[in-house]
Image (cartoon, rainbow, N blue to C red; front, side):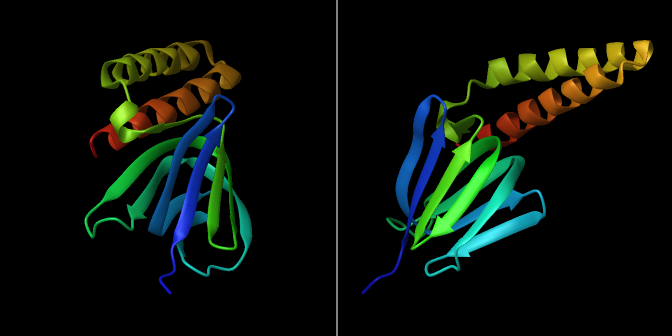
Length: 140
């Protein structure tokens, strides 16, 4: 019997991804986590990073999902990601992501000039999210 994972990525706006996979690689706040079939149960907070899903339908079929924080749960060969927001590589509007990157960079400069630590942190998170989306979009 072939073993595989069922992978679901869910956001407040609904289901973003639902497929079978051989392997999932996600970045938690403690580092990279690789998941194969029969992985021990785990719940971990996710960083703003890409999630790679190696699908079972083809040796070279990998999906990339930009995840902007959330939680990953692995149990009984089901990988569930509950994310603040998430986009598949094919769904990312690159122009919009580049504009978000530019706005974040401008906000960072302004926050540094005014020494607004809270605004600086928010702008850095926005920049990280924009860069994550841009990087994932390159895997279309």
